[in-house]
Image (cartoon, rainbow, N blue to C red):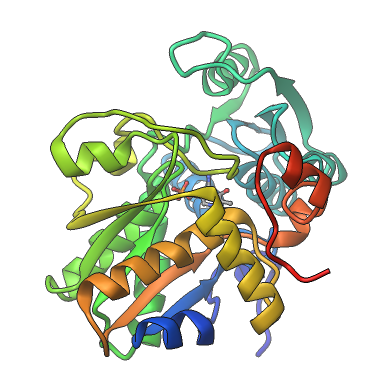
Amino acid sequence: MSLPDTLALIGHTPLVRLKGPSEATGCDIFGKCEFLNPGASVKDRAALGIVEDAEEQGLIGPGATIVEGTAGNTGIGLALVGNAKGYRTIIVMPETQSREKMDTLRALGAELVLVAAAPYSSPCHFVHVSRRIAEETPNALWANQFDNIANRRAHIRWTAEEIWEQMDGRIDGFTCAVGTGGTLAGVGLGLKAKDPNVTIALTDPHGAALYSYYRDGELKSEGSSVAEGIGQGRITANLEGAPIDTQFRISDAEGLAQVEALLMDEGLCLGLSSGINVAGAMALARALGPGKRIVTILADTGFRYLSTLYNPEWLAAKGLKSQAKA
Ligand code: PMP
């Protein structure tokens, strides 16, 4: 295959059958290999969708600056897309995120603004800081991934279509965790439009408020998680109207067990959100019963977390125990 330009490398990711999770549940569980995107995460799709939507609306043009608040992966996607299209990027990120994501952003030439972790209600939260920087910067676009539904449209148009084709139109369930909700809502809406019988499930980490919201209508969180890029406390514009049929809550320990099993038994090196997604897919498989065909998202590469998730000292400091053999 030859492609016309580097932006065409975004998307078209394969689906892979995950042997261990499939055998453990009697279902076929498939992972969408989003870590194979050029920026090594699912967020390249949202970045491209948001920038091209802004171009179509005439909101940005030559010499523009893209500004965004992000846990890192969207920033990496925007920096790549920005470089390919000739836009500068300013990325605001909480200092709690992995060193590797910061180094990658700097290497891509993004201007990195690190802020202390703060609740969404605080003006110091990374999203609000990024909006202010965009307002103060001439010729700037605030990507606004949480509430800009060009994000979920990218998943309706690309991710859901690819999954439907790759599954030959035979899919019983889909699940993933939520950062902005672009992936879950976009794939959910896209698949339901093809087949209303597909079960769409939320997989929520501890510390997020959506599990209780979809179960009994109340935004309430419990516990905490060290997973980066997921864990939402509000209904973002991307989540509005998302067709969620059922929900699961998955702990970091359950997610870590899947990350380690996928690495040691199947040779896949993934981030913690992917492990949580796979644990969620197994919970969905058990709820739907044997023989079902279920898809989840392998959201980013584990090489982004060598100093954290794959570092036994870091895990111990976070109270997480590795099951991996020495
Ligand atoms: N996993 C990782 C590693 C991420 O960076 C993100 C994006 N924040 C997600 C999952 C969730 O994706 P979305 O924003 O589409 O909900």
